Image 1 (tube, rainbow, N blue to C red):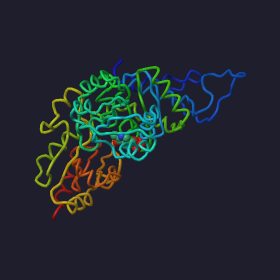
Image 2 (cartoon, rainbow, N blue to C red):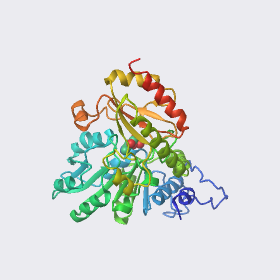
Image 3 (cartoon, helix red, strand yellow):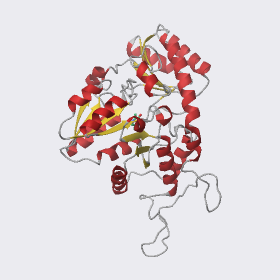
Length: 382
Ligand SMILES: *Cc1c(COP(=O)(O)O)cnc(C)c1O
């Protein structure tokens, strides 16, 4: 079956007991057992809950993977991957990524003896150079947050397979509608379902999808043992969201391309980064690897922080705030928000300047969005 159909039906069969078409919110912590050690598949909701099972099945299906695991947040899902390793292990990480993931590797797991080093994200060969005897994992985002760089997943997975190293891909920005990393050879797909999958800016959630049963069993053990699972109500909201993922991603992508073209021609805009623009250095790879270019556009303005302040103050539809992937348009200032946990020096080294803004293009009407940006750009220096 096709993506759109699977999103609405997989893991979501009508309730056998009542016929309810929608998966019920099983708001329960525990389950009656039929006898000593005899249960119906559920014992305690940290270990398993039927609403969460529906979500885990649906997300696995969207990624065309075998096994899904849901978590309380994207970072809980990321941390769950790292629980597979131990002191003395090494991981290679793409050098442009979500600030919170960087913080997780540097400030949390480094303390437990897991060493992370960074490879140039848009160059698979630079990952190969960093793989050592104790390397267990390569971790990438593509497109990255917030510079929207890509890595060739087929080329990278060949390198990790040859080296016997796991490849984890944070697929939050593309969503499974636009890109399915497992099909390109990744071992683990990571999601912040908070973003496009849930899509309505009303929950925090995360997920992993894998194909290998042994890897799944290990992750499942740690999921239960460390306990960062989502509740049934949050699981239900993610299911509610993912049913319309295809419609939303098509609209996000179309609006983003339209606005990227508009911004690229505007004199107040120094730089526009969007994988759908032919000016993007990896536009050809984006066309090959993704089935659309997504809803995130990053820009740099002329005029320093003063320009950023004037611009963001004037926006009426775009909300100034953290996060992305919701139906409403949002503008983030990475220097003080998503990447505030990175030193200024490191930020500048990566190209996230004080004039850099990340735009999450929503699904409002594109003409209204363009007008809002036009007005705000006109306010700079006025
Ligand atoms: C938001 C985000 C995360 C973290 O997810 P939370 O749900 O906020 O914990 C991880 N990776 C990427 C790419 C993100 O955008």
